[in-house]
Length: 125
Image (cartoon, rainbow, N blue to C red; front, side):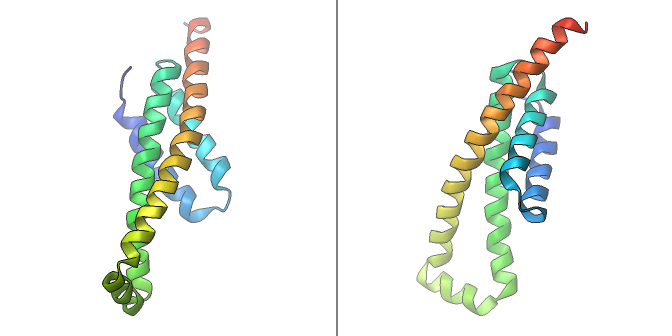
């Protein structure tokens, strides 16, 4: 099991782009998970672990970006939400949902990508 920083950074950037640009989030997450798993090249377990790390970091960055987007669009509602702790509750709910959703989808796709890379690398060496 090897953590590779290059595919992780590329995956996080792609997740943020997919989340805010397209409405086909599930297809994008499967594609990014597969890509990260394939780029790591160490088998199914390495692809799974790297894809889960990308999913975790991507969901954390997405939640942080959504909190700042809410504060920049309507600062008065952000202040009211802060006083009533709604922002923290919504952020934690979004984070937990995103963590489960991103990690499961990307972990499965990353394991498939890592397994395919490992099986193809035997034939092309």
